[in-house]
Length: 383
Image 1 (cartoon, one colour):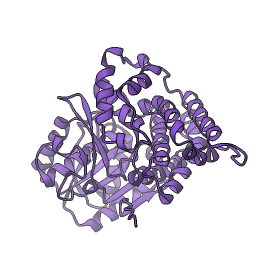
Image 2: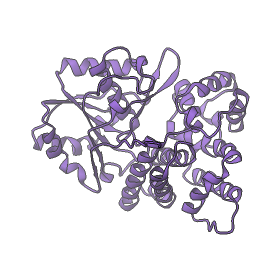
Image 3: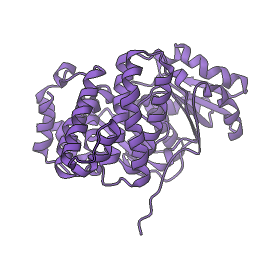
């Protein structure tokens, strides 16, 4: 018998205006003071005001740490931890996209387990539950607010460390589409394609099972229907809300089924070049999945059907070809760059990128393990 373990936060608030209810839920936790973890952009934007208002109304005390970097580093996490101790905070409220969420997870784990951030690279490396986190998301993409995955850059090695840790799971997640309006089209596209990558990899991985398949398929369908609208009009609240549901569904899928080699390669581009994670995923997704389809074409049947293909008389390979073609077309439609060289990536780093891709914690979740030469070839294809 195989036991499947399904991780998801105990309380998840979703829907327009749900941020207004957060105060009462935090009160129920019974903590004294929060470290509010965010970045400089959000700390000076009206978005943070929408978060702070219900906190103040409920009498929730907090101190703001807004020094999170776009790709948080070990030192960045240490800075947040020092501030948490200085302010005598006993829980964390994270506000933002993947970077503040990941930084908050790192701070949470170090606060209760001690040691160095590098000690927690890999799968379930901590011994104790992290400091409680209330994760308030402001972008439709990473699903970091509901998952046990977080990524911290080791600045000494130039490597993005993937930490998969059940002890980092948030107590409460908040996905309010009203916090996501006005996001730039490029950010909306990148985070949306990140969400698509999560769903597709969760379907293709050998770790998939019926529950994760169901949530991943639903996420794929929603993203194809609503991401172009959200990119075209940042104030399209219906599109924003449907993308909220998509990231929640996709997050549940990959949180429990796992990811694959798209993420393994994308992490290295982020670690070396400090590139946006969603953009890297979007560029790599059709390349890696084309190779996966040579081994497990049957895995793409559900994806093709979710996108709109009548699969009745189609072979598995025809379904795979259709799905990969549509993924590439969606990426172009929402404005993702087509070449890594446009982003400053050079051939000189390909050996390092390939070596580290093969060591990445997401790599074993792929249907097959590429060789170093195959990995370099995939990078070169979009260089």
